Image 1: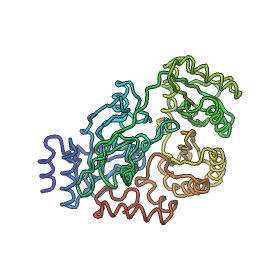
Image 2: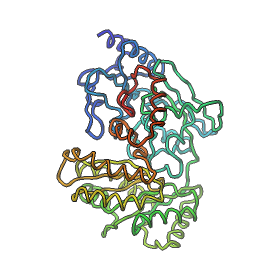
Image 3: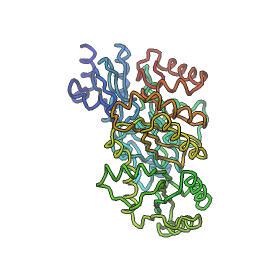
Image 4: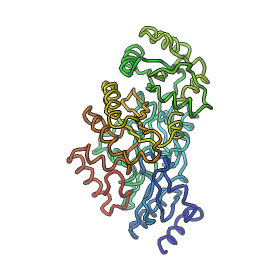
Amino acid sequence: MDFLNTLQALLGEGGVLLGDDTAGYTLDQRRRWQGVALAVARPRSTEEVSALVRLCGEHGIAIVPQGGNTSLCGAATPDESGHQLIVSLERMNRIVEVDAANNTITAEAGVTIAGVQAAARAAGRLFAAEWGAAASARVGGGLGTNAGGVNVLHYGNMRELTLGLEVVLPDSRVWSGLRGLRKDNTGYDLKQLFIGAEGTLGLITQAVFRLHPLPSATATALVTVADPAAAVKLLRGLQDEVGDRVTSFELISRRCWELLDEHCPELPHPYTALPDWSVLLELSDAGESEALLERLMEALVAQGFDDALIAQTEGDARAFWLLREGIPEAQRRRGVSIKHDIGVPISRIPEFLARAEVELKALFADADIVAFGHVGDGNLHYNVFLADRGKGVYAHEPAINAAVYALVAELAGTLSAEHGIGVLKRDELTHYRSEVELDLMRTIKRALDPDNLMNPGKVLGL
């Protein structure tokens, strides 16, 4: 067709994938959503992105932006019509600038999170975004979902790490807001419209990120706690003792350890007797690791935790983190679950965990609950299996979600703390956001994308 011929001429060799070559782009990471793409466009520059957006507008072709295709909510998967164009920015993968004196780094949207981390580290700086898919997740996708990870407690999520953006708008204009400023009060903070919008308002092509001094000292420990309330108390006690040196604080339930034992025997396992609850925590600072480690041990002993497993070497610490990062893989090997990425005030986490289990067990006696996550910032991954039901569990997803999300709402929480909305939570969003909020979101969407060509059907379902 004329559209594809023009697109191929625009993007050149390797710039457009068709037919079987699109297969790796049309199935999501969870293997739950399978779409059919008209083609996959792979531009190399902002100018090419702008030109292809203009071309799509002229032909009425909808665009599905895609980073590393690691979305957990179906945000980067096309529908089944075969009329949507996937736009992958994987070839826009340059580190544009590292300004160590300004503590900033500018990167194109196709650079992986690990790639930005490496470039920052080479300059003696830290890019603090960190999550399990860092080697494959790309900057654009991380910004599109306002991704979080294990370091949010100390450094914040992608919103806090981002100083400036470049965005191709739905009308093909380019907004260049690549300013590495901490203070800029010249009107609306436009970049915040696009962070977390999942590609529904425009295509992010570059970003300026905040960097931090590279910590020279870390201290890592696995601590057995009696229950989630004890974990929250430990967090507050540590913060009172060592302040913002607490970088990560991850809650892990006994069921997580059981799944790791059963499904990930290749990972080293630290426990002979599995604890009901445990915390993986890390401190970071300048100075010597030995001194920070001693400070951590003193703080733990002062709170009655004299049996913590302390990482004595970097290898020990990495082994602990491999276990935490292995929990999603252990769940995948276990089978199909109903996943929740919820957030509640930190003080309400114990109440949520206790009440949610009671309510779910009342609905499904065979509910197998796997709870873990970033308790330091109130974000829990709360996943529910039903024994031996496989994909049949999806038939019960509405009932499970209703129970979980009603409790989250009662506790003043959120149904999406870091994974986004996509198609998975699109309908739920309408029940847990006010009409005023939804109206404002729809107004922004229609103002910027009146023809609804930017990732239609995602977030708002327009």
